[in-house]
Length: 216
Figure (cartoon, rainbow, N blue to C red):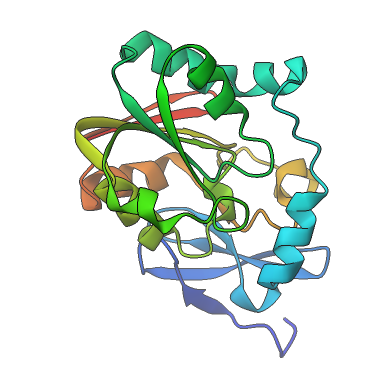
């Protein structure tokens, strides 16, 4: 093993020990023995300016039918479970807040937050019936901190809708396209979601492909 490579690190979700797992594109990844998450070692994280520049290359036009179809599992789930009186937060909305557009067009009240593009701390002082996190949670540098924040923003009975690709023992990490984006730094396992429910005050996690529904 490279003598500059740490053999272990502390899991950024559950605080247990994560051991070296793989090297890809000269970046080291670690896997937690407890929650089974896979994470990038912090020394390979992009700087905030580098991360923002990467996001600015994304062509996420809210009016693009393909983009709308991509986020539709979250939009459809919200419409199925909440009436138009519900108040929602699009957390990590990015450069093209398509979920906000689609739900606002459908009559829902939506707030926007993104640390790079919609940095409005006032929206983090309120509570919501639901929160949408589409392709966001894999970008969390401090997932435990972020999930605690998200839980605090939900009303009793509120729902957190996430979309991401989960890691499993069947994942061929070397060939897994999802790790190739340098801003994708934390990958969740089903056991990661179980840990989140047990320790961060969510009562239930439902997984439907890439759609993850966390209920308070």
